[in-house]
Amino acid sequence: MTGTTDVVVALVSDTWTDAVRRGFYSTADQTLQTLFAAEEVGTVLVADHPRGVASQVRRRLRGDRPAPRRPGLRGVRPLSLVTPPPVPAGALRRRYRAYDLQTAVAARRHGLRRPALVTFNLWHAALADSRWARQRVFYAQDDESAIPSHAAHREQTLAAYERIARSGMAVVAVSQVLLDRIAPTGPGLVVPNGVDAALWAVPPPAPVRRPRPVAFYAGTVDARLDLGAFRALAEGGFAVHVAGPLVDPAVRAELSAVPGVELLGSRPRAEVVALAQASDVCVLAHHRTPLTEAMSPLKLYEYLASGTPVVATRLPGSAVAGDRVAWVEPGGDHLAGARRALALGRQPEAERQACIREMSWRSRHRPLLELLAGDR
Picture (cartoon, rainbow, N blue to C red):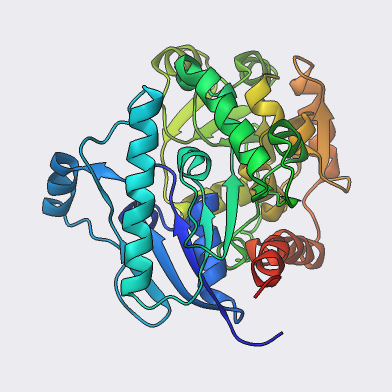
């Protein structure tokens, strides 16, 4: 097999500028980074999510731009009449077929040769046939039918999964649960989320003595969190530090009322690394719901990369090998789990570095690269 594969990547709800702003953190962002670095890949065209005229003007005034033209990288910012996806099926179909056409035109204009398409956009995958692409791949990051804010569109989402499954297109999912829910008739791959090896490989700080052990949570503060676990940790003698966007006001209010819980808000990625490494225990405490069952929790892998022991709710998509996690059944005793985790101590540095290499995005994405190269 010789030559390289050109790839078009269609983003789900954001843009190239969003990826740059957050430091290439998300699954889609890191997939882009893998493709840029891969010898098997030629040119990558990044297709922003379609946005309405007014939204594009506002973003452009703020300095937002499509991916810059440089060796191996191109960008396109498709236009839509309005930004929010329309609900009527016919309008939704027209929107994403127009998006697909603009993306195809950009691929031809930039000279991509028989490109493969990797789309993170459910509606794009389901409603546009993308015949211009040599190969189509839908990359599923979450079960969108189980997202509470998408409840009004659940039946449409399930119908979209059925269309994707029947189409025979390849599906990459972050967990086996999610892949099984989509049930593709074509190729199916499970690619769990990973870690940014360069970010997490920094040496940990020297341990410090403090009056109370620190339990650290990094991630979005929303209804997925088992607040009883955080309360139990704080009442059981832990200083609980929570770093992440506070998107649910009710959850924020309840957590902030617990003595011993400190809400740190969103922090830069390098600071999250330092906080995780300096803590005594890292915490993943989620309710069991259809959404969390299908997740591949990025924070769990990052916790493991920090070398700090972990207490985590046992969920289907969260399974990892090894003995660095004290597992707690959903609704169980996270305080007892945290005490078990404390007894594990920090992971030896050589083992931590090996763990980072194994969980790195570049290692995780190897099957995706093989899939894209498979029918050149």
